[in-house]
Length: 179
Image (cartoon, rainbow, N blue to C red; front, side, top):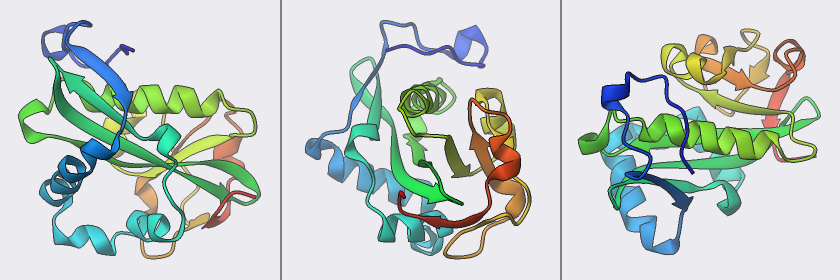
């Protein structure tokens, strides 16, 4: 699978160099080390981490991007519900420092969002992240304070992607398991 990236063409790997595949158990140690490098010890206090403590990630939506055969980036998705709507919490998204700014992370986000939003009964993909990075990928800011995480979050960093533009204004409530 190759995905279009909003990066300048010079920074995007050639389609033959970028490959997206499902995560396997052999990736676990690499992913854990990448978590540590990307987020440090504070990762355990993040609200999104608290969600994943309570709700297991969906292995069918856990992907690795490879560039020229090397693991470059990882993404996972957690099935959640907000206000009676089912969706996914995207993250963590991490890119190995040696592969940053080459389009692997953006390709993963595009890939998992397309897969999730094509599933019947899935209304949205939610994340806590940088608007400047995620907005070109279809994410918009949610109504500030409408969505409650099990820990503090900056409400300006709570972003949603949906095929239904009304979802952004109707999502409200606690982040819970699927209904």
